[in-house]
Length: 374
Image 1 (cartoon, helix red, strand yellow):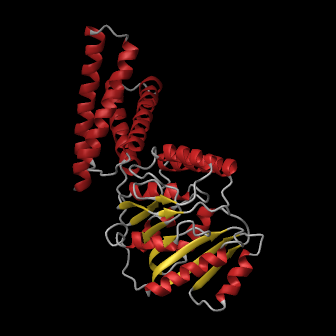
Image 2 (image 1 turned 90 degrees about the vertical axis):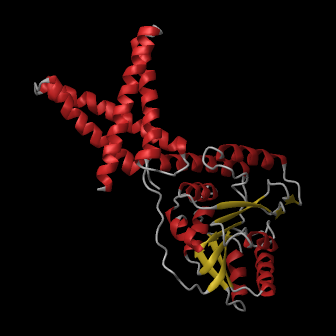
Image 3 (image 1 turned 120 degrees about the vertical axis):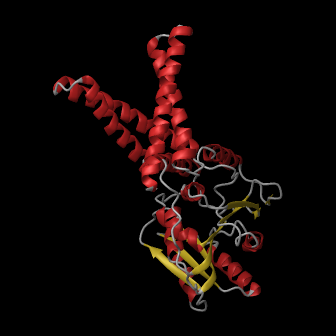
């Protein structure tokens, strides 16, 4: 019954769009003396826009805030419907000789069904709120650290994280995912495991990307909350206290270097500041109201791992962009919190190569949204 109501509403919206299309076409041609083709193009876009708004708000009652992505999808469905109309009219009327009005009626029904299903299943696909089974986790916090040739910093970082949690008396585990290191990183971590039952090591046989390492670590975690942290402890683990107080209310709490109250103790190189600005500019096309998407210090609920991280496809530095874009897409609650950050000289970020790869990730995320792969 609910589906029938949606179909009726969709049909009403379609009729209103047709009236708007014809009325605007008439005004533009007869009163404003526009060329008929230009007028037809404008009236078509106006009708499609009206149909988009009405279907989003009334027919499907869709609350997704990715308006520009949904509008593009809706417009593409409409264009395919227009091409399908031309093809079917040619087939039914010209080839099969069916009376043109009957051919148009049959075509309209088929195209209406196409448009409805295309928009229901693709454009206005419902926000997925998966049922997460109640589970008793072994730890309150899981700290996931991706590493790649971090022999100079990893031992100190692990020691600082362990000391923090021991003082705070919170149950925890540390999951280090070694992403194909060629130095002594793995050996150093293995030595640390001897006296640290809280330390878990996952070794990948080749370098697959920071995002892939984070995903593997998160899916292997057994904590109620999952913290993503950098191997060089550039955001000191003590900053977790700033994020902790918000996690019961928010699904994703993002450490930020760009908010009032943020502290950057070591001035970043000029090329890194430039890259950061470029990244911030690009991220606005995907993510709204988050100033620092690339800070590696993020605290998420376990439910987010199951609902978002498990879906992620980006394996490189664009993982953070994808995480936040998906969180907004599925209407999770996100909060950005100012933190203290130290620009470590030991950073493994490669300016030109990693910037180009992240740009590629950005384009791939856009493509995945447009093609419904999320």
